[in-house]
Image 1 (cartoon, one colour):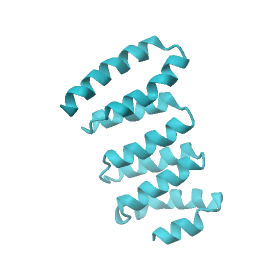
Image 2 (tube, rainbow, N blue to C red):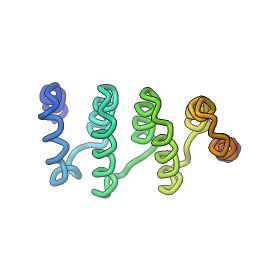
Image 3 (cartoon, rainbow, N blue to C red):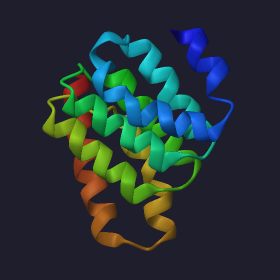
Length: 135
């Protein structure tokens, strides 16, 4: 199935159609393949499609772990969507997946650039909590 995705996803219409039709077979697709698909969408700048696929993964009761969140965060970071990154970090915490210190640190320059001091303070709190998780 992985080769199918690699060959078919070169066409964006096909990519959109595949995502729309994944609901019925999502539970039978390996998490690794889904992570590759998320990464593909993110690297091509299709972050909205990437997020839609992630929502489908979560609602289908797929086990979403640290590696899946890393794919989302890395691709959101590349395009500078720091508010979405904050949302993903919160989802991680809500799901009981502890974000790493690096994950919090990576969003900080974007927050500083927008001069969002409330978020800077929040990130500093989160970073101190992340440090305590790693001890």
